[in-house]
Image 1 (tube, rainbow, N blue to C red):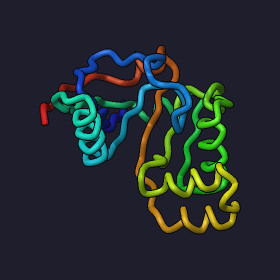
Image 2: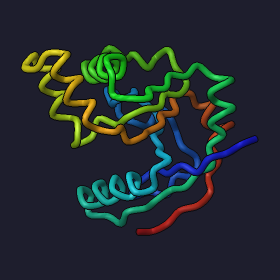
Image 3: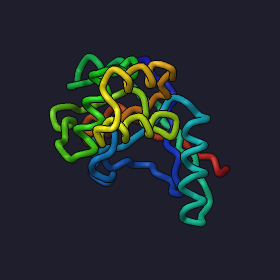
Length: 163
């Protein structure tokens, strides 16, 4: 089974991720978030650690991504487009579009693009302008595991690094 390395930045060692522990109304719903971008996970761990005044930790996992994509209900966003923006907006206003999925992957609504998302949500920017602004950015990547049995089966803890 082909596995990729993914990371979860935190202040805690997370050997057994719990999907229902995350906050609701996040980009891809309430789940366990990882990324294949080490730098992104490091930045998130540092941000959380600064806020909590704790030590940042980088959790590392092996993810059987191909198996998930063929055996679970998945949504993969390849770019910041209308579909992605609509999903993020619905998530943030509590409509829970992630309820129909086990796994969602795509761009993160981070500080590079969140102003555009917020202006669009507030009705201060039309769809065409928002999409034009979003198209200037290459999406970072996040994966959200929403189904506990899929997570237990296809996400394997591989250690931690103290930063």
